[in-house]
Each structure stands twice: as C-alpha cells, then as structure tokens.
Image 1 (spheres, rainbow, N blue to C red):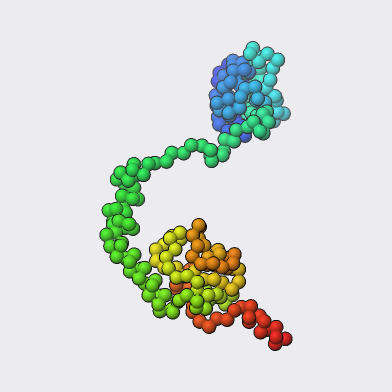
Image 2: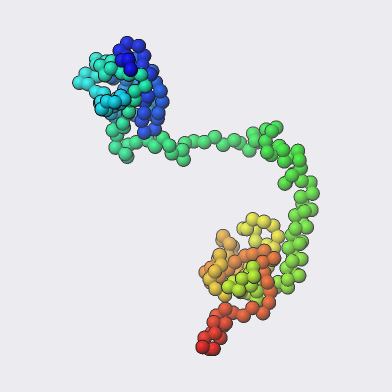
Amino acid sequence: MALHTGRDVPLLIRSANASSERRITPSWSVAQLRAKLEPITGVPPSCQRLTLRLPGHDEVVIEAQDEEVTQVAHWNLQAYAEIHVKDLRPPSALTNLTDTSTVPKYTMPASTYASLPSSVLAWKKAQKLGRFDPSLPEHEAQKIQGLWDEISARGIALGHRCRLGGEDTRRGMVAYVGEVEEIPGKGPWVGVELDEPVGKNDGSVGEKRYFSCGERRGVFVRPERVDIGDWGLLIDEDDEDLEEL
C-alpha cells in the first residue's frame, strides 16, 4: 500500500464514543491533529493518547517532544489506517455521551398539538371517537348503571361474606360499596376486608379512608369479581382440619 506524505489521507478515527472516516493532511502538526480530533471524539487535546494502527504492524503512539512543529507525515500514514483516541481523564471527569436522561427534550404545547391537522387527536375528532363521541355521556351512564345492577344481582351488601375471583384463598367481608375517586374508572367499587393479608391496602386509597382493616387486608374490586355466599373464615377451616387429625 502506498505511503502518503503530501496529499490528504483517508483514515479511520476511533474512540470510545465515536467512529468515522476523516481525511488527514500529513503536513499538519501533531498539535493541529489533536485540536481537529477534539470535536470528532469529544476528548480535549491535552487528554488524548493517540495510537496509529497499520495492517501488519505494531501499534505506534503518535506523540512528539515538540508537537507544534512535528508533522503527522513523520508516521508515514497509509490510507484507511486507524487512529485510536484514548481519553486519559479519570472516570469521574468523563462526560457520558450516551446518557440522554439529562438532555433537555422538546415538549410540544397542548395548544400546538391541538391545532395540528394530521394528528391522532385531529383524527379522533373527525371520527367522533373517545371523548369526542357525542353519545359518550350516555354510554358512561349506562356502564355505571350496569355496575350498580351487578351489585344488586349478586346481593353485594355491607357485612356479607364473599370470595374474590373464584379463589378460595381470597375470602373476606364486604366493607364498602360505592365510588372511589382515587381509582381511575367511574362507577362503584366493592371494598373487601380479607381474612388473610393478601390484599393491596388497609381500606384507604391515598389520603382517604373508606374502611378500616389490617395492613394488606383491604382491596377494592369491581362487582363482577365478588361472589357472595356462606364462605367461612379460612382460619376456622384450618382449626377444623387440625381437630380431625
């Protein structure tokens, strides 16, 4: 492969955060090369360790006693050889160029998005879907009434024994029936005080208390998951089993 000492030489520049092909002028001084590599690699000239890798040759360090005078041509560059740029700064001083969590991100104002003619929002408006459906209030009212009808049909009432989702291990007593504003979704919920600590709360949601029970013995579910019946206490059944031994 021919040696380049006067014309620009295409080289591969590699670093921890960058890799690209660049044309290097052999008449540059080493100091000039370092300065031109900084915007490519993000490594300040004083913190660069440059090594030249030629096919079939050992790695060579690019450095000189007087880098303002010594030209890059001194290393007999070959086309598409590699210059590796190592950052000598301690890890605590390095900038993480792959972490985008702290990079400011553009957030489109709601008013701007609402004015776009080809957005999903505009399509929903045109199709009268979701909250743009003129019959939505009627549908929501029917859904809420359906939940109350389910409560009546299942005989759900305060103090009644129940089990949840057909699971014998989740038995308890109905402790609340009604709206729970803190939970997404309109309509009534059924609060159950469970026999065992397999629930989600203690009868409160956020700062509001709907009923009182032990930690993780409370849960709120929709009516269709509640089976009313003469479900005995699990602890009582365990005692009965022990008596039969």
